[in-house]
Image (cartoon, rainbow, N blue to C red; front, top):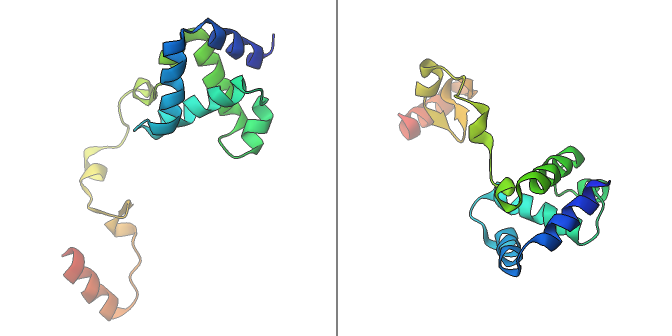
Length: 125
């Protein structure tokens, strides 16, 4: 059976309150991942095939299938961010201690000329 049909069946089995919650999460969830996953499910329920959702730029086609399968297996709780299930971080303490500027480690920022270095030191000291 197609994944889209399975998602529609699960959607129809939800209570009106649960459907409303998924719709509201697609609009105002504070987590971008939850918002994106809810939009994927709503798009599938609206009749859009997974490839069309991927081509529209909402996410990759493989992610549409992953989210859909989790929704079919777990229902609305399956839409939550599950990155914490990946395990503990592999970054060591030395890496985490480096100061960061705009998400980059300070040692990876290229500075050309003495004037730039002086400005850099004044700003980030």
